[in-house]
Length: 90
Image (cartoon, rainbow, N blue to C red; front, side, top):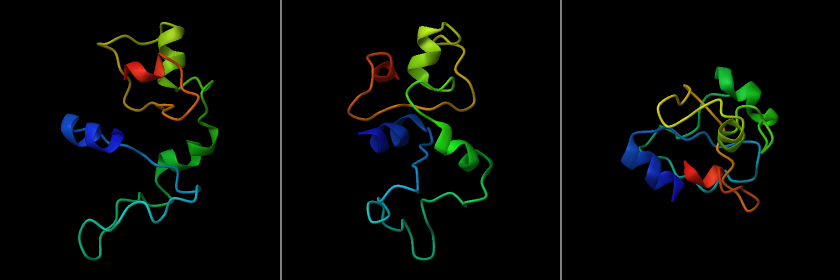
C-alpha cells in the first residue's frame, strides 16, 4: 500500500537495503533499478531512523514541529507493526 500511495501522490519511498528484501522489488526495466546508489546522501542516515527519531513523522507531529502545510523535504515514516497512530496519519 505504501508503494501504491507513493505512485499516486508522486512521492518517493526509500527502502532500507540492509534488510533482507532484495527479492521484493524487480527491475522496472532491463538494466535499471529501484534502488538508490549506496553513496546517496540520505543512505548514511538510514541506520539512525527509528520510531523515536527526530525525523520520524509521528515524532514531528507529537512535538508540533510540522503540520499539514509545513512538511520537510524528507522525513522517516515508521510504517511497521509497532507504528503509532501519528505515523499512520501520513
